[in-house]
Length: 195
Ligand SMILES: [Zn+2]
Image (cartoon, rainbow, N blue to C red; front, side, top):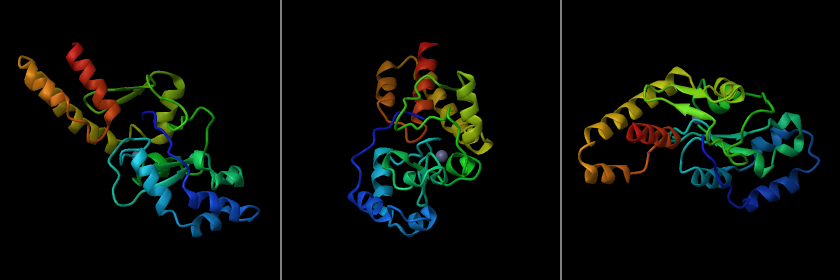
């Protein structure tokens, strides 16, 4: 996870919130709402990555209500409560389900820098009890994600070590942006070069 900047609220959402005001079923209202505009805005703001696990988003994504809408009807069309998630089983929105915990971090509101530690074998560890609980609640350590991170981070580390004596080539390589897992990517670069 890394800090995200929320773009201006789409007009369609403002209109939907006004129209919805007082409607008893938030689920029906949300289901009928045309979500393409907000999906696109969030996707751009998140560089086409899941806000939680940082995998590249595929063609199917989930608009997560960070705080479940059942807790408060007003959260249904609350722009600050909407986060774009991957749709993979075992992590992120699907793993969160309808739950909510006060120690959870919405990366649009809170900077998670320093909360999580990544290893080149794909593991993730929390730097506090809350961070460790978030990893568990969001499934950020599920085998699928660990395996995917391991592939990318191991080859990153190997490339850096292979270019150790070729500073120009290494600089050139490090200019490339991470395709996914940018937080883990940066940590492994810092750790490997600092070693
Ligand atoms: Zn995800």
